[in-house]
Length: 488
Image (cartoon, rainbow, N blue to C red):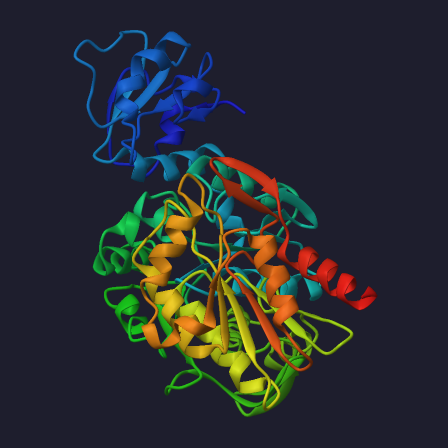
């Protein structure tokens, strides 16, 4: 679908050198993908500066270049567009190229350290159950209607996002729900999207390897709310002190939710069990299949967002009561001899603490909690000892093991985790770098009534070691081991 340069640049402050009536075949920011008739956008990335590849893009046939710094001798048969920030301009340019598809969708963005996947996925399921055709962008999978598209990032690049929005609009979707990561916000990958609702879940220790400090992490999240229109809703969790920070200077209509604080939307957990909990939503009692205070907060966010989108509250509650847990989020497997294994994606200190607290509240009296915990390689190292300390303080037995070590030595990661454990807790801690053997050991240690927490990977079906991804599924492995123990 060819577009005129002047149409692509609608609403983007820029200086044009060349013919703005030139037709563009497509937009690319990776010079390797540029073909004849394309517009190349030179983005200054984390590791690479796209300006260094303008010559390569021109050699491959680019007829337009959008950049911050013009070449010394701009080619005369090429249209150059100079902007202040190429990354910020890329999203709106791609959106214009595709006809601004997000404007034809009711778009909901979810940001925060924990809960993004659960909230976005549950909203997708709720609105689909109401008979709507919906889109989803998540860590686990992207969906256009019922069609699955593999997810490679929590939030894709700007071209991929707007391309997916175009597919959703073309295939008749009326709603779209997406996770919005701090990396994507910091890199302006979500620029040009027209959100109807933005949700803030919480902000805890994570990604400080990228953002360097907590303030940088907070500011990245806040960009979502700073860029909302006056017609949009900013919905924030006021149980987190940073919720109100997100609302500062936002033009959007401000709404709050909370399970501990005074808020526009309230929930209270009345009873908790392994198969669900009884929750009061705005003075209506409801049984839901999810477990834990953090999940009550997630479901409250779903309830609030759907209400802001105009769905009658009774209809929301009717469907919420039938929704199952999201893949890899507090999923449980039970053995025939009475052992419960919980598989959860918890890979931050706060998420791990939430899961451990929930298990301790509902596990049988006198039973033990055996926690299997790892930490990802090539990621924020500061959280490693914190997570190990939490596991040791809140569990009867702990196994430190491998997560996705990536390029790092698994034993080195485990040694950094072990530094967080108080010497008085050493006797309860085992170090087993082979994750399958660690799960096997946990199953062998568990007796009737005990609970095993297998944390860190959740929905993931691979393990990455030395740059090689191999098939690995925590749920499948624990089921296999339970079956083996049954035969014995």
